[in-house]
Length: 38
Image (tube, rainbow, N blue to C red; front, side, top):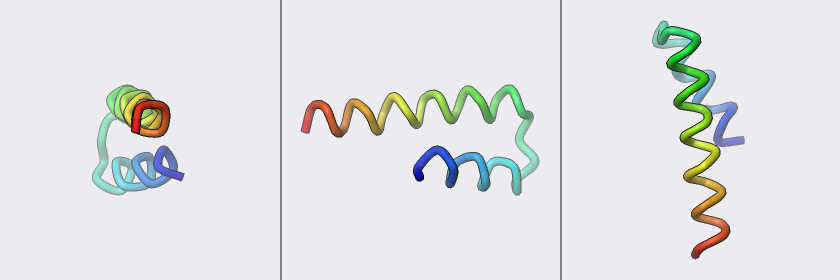
């Protein structure tokens, strides 16, 4: 869900696809860490 929202927002803003992929990876890591280490 978070990754989808990030991708949608960045695509709307015209962010480069490679930068978008990097942002999605960072988002995934942050969400995983937040759930693993509350």
